[in-house]
Length: 457
Ligand SMILES: *Cc1c(COP(=O)(O)O)cnc(C)c1O
Image (cartoon, rainbow, N blue to C red):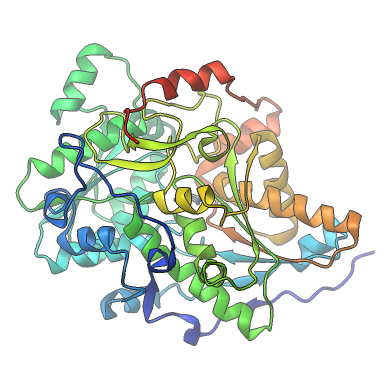
């Protein structure tokens, strides 16, 4: 029998916040400073300003201002695709036959197909405001590069994207979208930087890595007048911009008189989860009752569940500052059969600290075949083809809802649907063909990466 269920999204202009929320202002912990790797002294705004736009460097180190006003031109841009929909997943609830209520905040409704645009547009705005010519960045799967291409196209900034070579070859359409918005996409390792040339001389057939691409983009920015480097996750400034997700989600949930029991997000560098959970984490930090927070990561790149909370470099080339975070070691590269994104070796320092202090209740690692199983069910019943990254959160939302079915608990679950999966069809094809496999690194594999962590307390 086909049953009728109401499909409804909840969004109103009034949910779009006027200010971003800086979670760090409410964290009762000593924020471990970002260190200059040469001196091991805390970096200053001045240090960071050589790499980042000055306003962004200030935001990076700001742990006192609770709210930071969203510049009006950024809010105007947000209005083109925000507030993003909060959706009650009635069809999924029905398919699971669960007493739980499931909501998701959908960030895929823009051309870049992910939440990354929320920070890209802010970063491009500050670069423009500073009078820069352009910015450089790296991209792995391509979502960040696409979002930044849109943002730079909008503000008329030059953009050079170092795209991990194998990804550039596997995802020609991602590259085409970036170029359509005016970006210059360079396959990494490239011969345009010192780091790239060195890499090519040593490994002529290298298909690249995110770490190398970061090193190239940083070198490019710091050796060209009028350019700065920008990054799409991990950093405090990115979590700040992504707070727009959580502030909107809470406003929409409040309208419905709902308060989630569980908040779930996938965690690569930590920016979408940091953004989604921030408004509810504020309650927890104030000692009020709050949801259970679950971070979901791939079993093949398990920084929170099996990494170390330690100072580490943010890139493989060891040119970036040191941050205290959960890490697998800056040389860690996930197994080549890993198709589902979320392949960064570290985790946002904010998320890392919250997890370390017990404010994030749980981190769960899931295997990719289970992730794609959840993705496929979700696509069928909820209509949206999810990104593999987002599907990590879907997996755990489903598992939690199924647990409610066993116990009869009527929990309210909120998860982040961070994006769409149109450019991930090679991974879906592998899953559909039954050739996708799972890989869980052994303790010895991980020990190798952790052995080379810088020795700093
Ligand atoms: C980049 C990305 C992620 C992971 O990044 P976070 O910084 O952890 O949020 C998740 N989902 C999508 C769709 C992405 O593009």
